[in-house]
Amino acid sequence: MKVEKIIYALLVVLMCGVAGCKRIGNSFDLDVEIARVGDVSLYKHDIRDIVPADISSEDSLKLVETYVDNWARKELKRQQANKVFASSSEEIERLVSEYRNSLLTRKLDQYYVDSYGTDSLYGAKDLTAYYEAHKGEFKLPTDIVKGRVVAMPKSFTQRAKIKELIKASSADKLQDLAAMCEKNKLPYSHFEEWVDYADFLKQLPTKRNESYSDLLKEGVVGSMTDGKVLYYFVITEFKTKGSVSPYERVEEMIRWAVDKQRRADIVKMCDDSLYQAALTEQRVVINL
Image: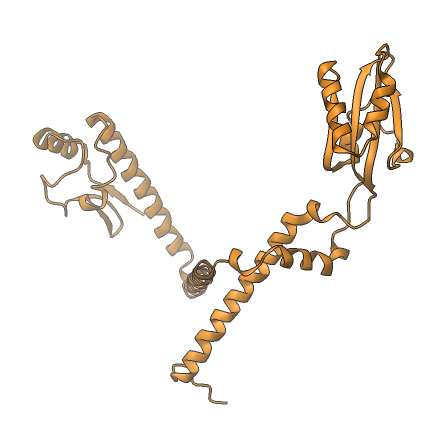
């Protein structure tokens, strides 16, 4: 296939010089042909808006040349595809039509959803209700815990106080623990939210590939040492692999599922309304 390109560089330079601008203006006929691939042409009016006003004439010329070259390559490839797949043109047109229809209907579905807004159609009660109805789907893939870890030198003289406070449940004593650790610059990790047990163990001098499932006990103060540093830890809550996940661990997943269902409900409601109206107005006639 022959590609015929008309050199446009001189035209751009002359135009910028005469008009005193960097954009492709109206100094010349906008129907001037710039490039041609087979029987398809690219005209000046097709590219008049591609050049920003704040670049040099040299950059403008490069931008136009690149655009025209890319256009010619794409058009050449399109024409070649038409030639190679000429015998499949009906199938291609069918696929294009199906894709267009699918795109339009998806946009209409989104229009329906945007018009109603899914957030206003459900609240916290709906989320918890979904959780209760689908608990069996939310199995934990690993052990999870809540707890605390304090690290201190083995020579630290107030170890007993740390051991007493770390297992406390009252807010006042936990504040005392945090203050004591801060005052003495002791590393303190407080896992108030659920974390994987593996992440909790990373705070301790554990050995790789060794099981520590025997430590999964609530309210029991444990200790470990790496020789220089003593670690006190307590697990306040735990859930084992395979048990039902706590709501807060799967809330976003539940929100996504409920939102998806609400979207489907909105689309169905609007589709049904459209269909019933069309039947009433006899825009749809079923001859069965």
